[in-house]
Image (cartoon, rainbow, N blue to C red):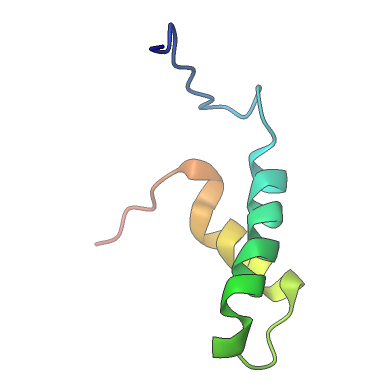
Length: 61
């Protein structure tokens, strides 16, 4: 069965992007904790949220 529609949530009205990222941070920490030292879930969540920039690309010169 092929999808009949694809929805793009560009302004976070359908999903909570920040909450999704924080949930992913838990998975990331579980998968990679053996590679990191002294990193908390809060640290990972904040870093991913900062780099995500709300889904907007940061222009770098």
